[in-house]
Image (cartoon, rainbow, N blue to C red):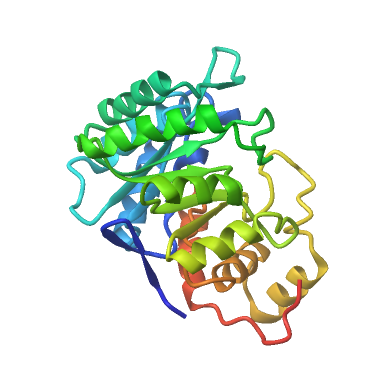
Length: 285
């Protein structure tokens, strides 16, 4: 299995790290254990992680500030990727921030809190009300959003432009105007509604980063990890159900990049180890 894939000008390991779980409960406020959060980030880079996904609205500010504290000055090969298009209020509500001036302001806020002059990529998070639902294209707004993202890239604030929560139509329109280096959509073994987007990314050599690969972290029942085939295979191979699910997701296409998040060093080490897992040929979740 291929172990790396391009992310713009970077070539990154296909298993990266998502910073969403570093802040406190509900992705709000400081972590329960500050020193452990710093240790997880340091350990991730030590294990070869060279792709970290974050957002200004994780915390808000918290994940970016933890990344800066743990890893700055950053290794030259570390691809820091953030996203814009949403914000949080004091109650933790997820708010839309879709106007071009908001996108630009939030790119600049990411740069300040991370302490860097340029990000490897920034995903335009297309907001449709439901954070896990891909909505229709608002062509007039989307064109203005792309103009703002292209300007930020051309001015050197970001190296590559990405899309998140995007449809095939979003991706097609964007590619008619500019290069897209990554797409981040919900995708897992029970929700493959973004398969057409993944297929289009594969065709164009664009990295595809699934969020919620283990199922939504906001669903305590988590039918993905409870899947009977997953649990049977995990027991047979001696891995956790999460490792089996992540290994399956990695096997779906060579351009899939994973960003499993955790605040536990043990889980981090388990996640990084999935590249070595060989699933049986008859595994059919």
